[in-house]
Each structure stands twice: as C-alpha cells, then as structure tokens.
Length: 75
Image 1 (tube, rainbow, N blue to C red):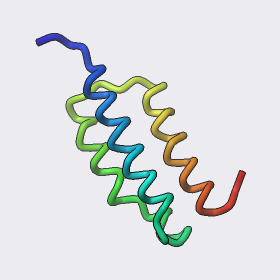
Image 2: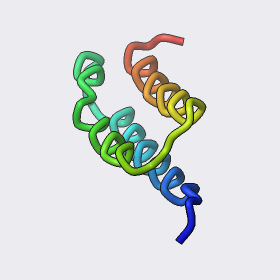
Image 3: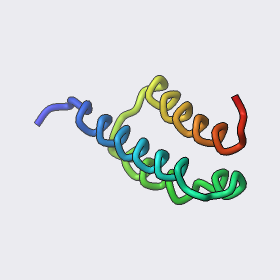
C-alpha cells in the first residue's frame, strides 16, 4: 500500500459526473436541482479518508455549478 490517492480521486470524479449527468438529463425542476443533498453525501463520504486539495474541491464545485446553471438556463 502507498499514499497514492489517484484511484480514489478518479472514482470520486466518475461518481459525481455520473450522478450530475443523470440529474441534468432528468425532469427535475430548477428548484429540485438546488436541493442536492442526495448527491453530495456520496462525495462527502469519501472526504473523511481521501485528502483533497483546493483544486480538487474547485473542480467539484465547477461540476456542480455547471448543472445548476444548465437547469436555470444561465450561461
């Protein structure tokens, strides 16, 4: 075992991307999209054991913001 977290980071990226793509393609209203407490825990669960840098957190924030902007028809 080593302290290389690339595998875990890649898995977190894939999980969040999959869930956000499903949310963006769903019939959820913009208001329901803002209620993202069902998606964030699956990502937050890994934060307890996976060290994430500020660029990683910014990347997750951008991914979430993209879906919210899409649902609200913002550019």
